[in-house]
Length: 491
Figure 1 (cartoon, helix red, strand yellow):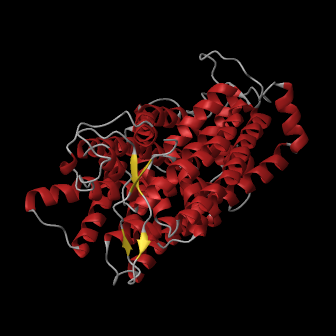
Figure 2 (cartoon, rainbow, N blue to C red; figure 1 turned 180 degrees about the vertical axis):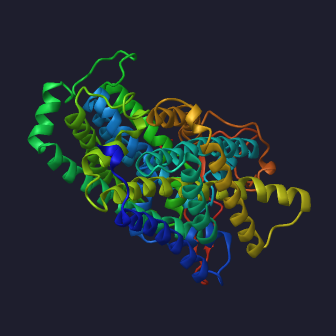
Figure 3 (cartoon, rainbow, N blue to C red; figure 1 turned 30 degrees about the vertical axis):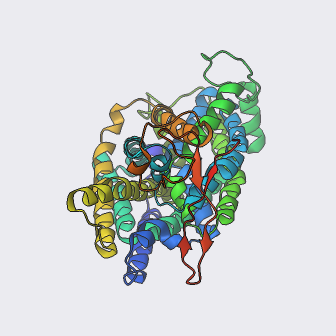
């Protein structure tokens, strides 16, 4: 029985190595950049990141433990209709690449919400920042809680210990190493996730009787679905709710989420950032398909003999249970799968903590410091404050993770609900700023330091969506903003 199978030495070695390497990457970048202390280097990687770590980091931020644990369970109970959500990315990525990304990159800002001040006012910028912070804190708490379930199931760790171990390691390397450490650990963790999922798919398929058995079992139970075009909003999954709703949900991630925008801004050129994002399109299709197939393997193993209620307590524990039930006798495999789930959580939480530190430092702390002291913070002290802010957000996430169990029965539904309720309004704010010129803020031009009142574009109310463009390099190779404004897309 699976409950008699325990972690062996190889499992613990793999699991601990994942922790040690992740922390070691943070220590390496903290040591390497100790003489280059600046907020831009700490929070944006010096805007010199290469396409490889950025591509994997973008994917790792998307593929959290929420999806690794939630999608296969969704397929087990409700069939493969969920796979249609992959098609939403075919719409999402071109829109994000060509409509949103260039605006942020040409501005050369640090926080996406600086654009809201340019377009509207300081008040809107602050409100957008706060909404984002609420969204990410709620989401990261759920993401941190998800692998704690896995560790509790397969290793017998207490929930308290699991959350603390994951949260503290993640907070440690994020706070000392900055964005460079976050993205390179994301790259390492993404490789672990891919190896873990691929190993699970291959080994579990063999153990349950082969691909034909998996396929035929799902076909006989009518689990193979991809053709529900019902227009009723009361259906759980239809082509329209998944393609259209998935598009909006994905746009909240790739179009207006600071964690993603921060990665765009960390690259030297807009074209490199666009290429990195486009590489995520096939990767997202591959990973979603793998997770859907894991759900079919779950059904091939258990069929209608649902282990929830009689063997395990929650649906979100089904993947750890499958690992120990079917593959627990293979030395090292349980450790690899826990490292996979653990890595998926680490990458998402570290990205969120780093993004929260940047937005709080740029949109809240710096303006408040200037308001009260009438002076700016020197870079060395600002970098120290950024690290302390990252620590605070990491500890706050750990605290909120203990409340996640009270938020609902299914992790996937909780995560999607958070992005819908909080991410949707934030996305609409950026859409109005970029594409709807009649939506404005009643602000005098001289109240905004970004705006030159001598330009005829600005009257008592702004009549156009505007953004900075046409930056040029001077003889010292530094960037200067030209006082030239262009109308937003489609205008």
